[in-house]
Image 1 (cartoon, rainbow, N blue to C red):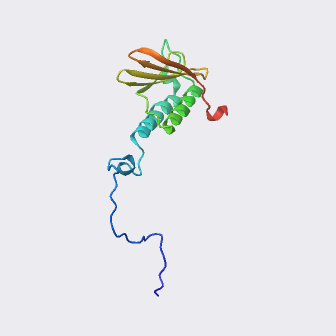
Image 2: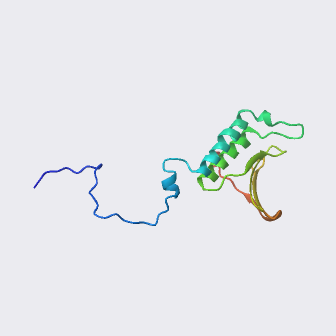
Image 3: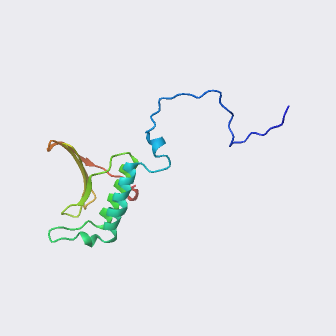
Length: 147
């Protein structure tokens, strides 16, 4: 009886190949080892827009507009990260509002969604279909600092 040692790097040989119905364009095969496109888009919004606003909120000053505070920007970064981790599609755009808040907007065809972070820390979700308000809900955000 030959003495052989098993190795975690060598598997036993298979007799027959097994056919599966897995699509070759599935994310696990197409993007193995890479961030998916939605997560990448979220990260771009966080890194190149929100973090930049946080470095210099004064860049958003205007005669008729109060720029978001660093706390509001930090809350927006937390929200963007949480929505990304939960698998939500990234917004079409993120814009400051006139009262020191930040608005996440997403439009797809005749559907429009927004999440408005107010300067007082409150948040509201709105959903529109064909420009008509269908849903409006106050959100309770549990950020890392509020727990």
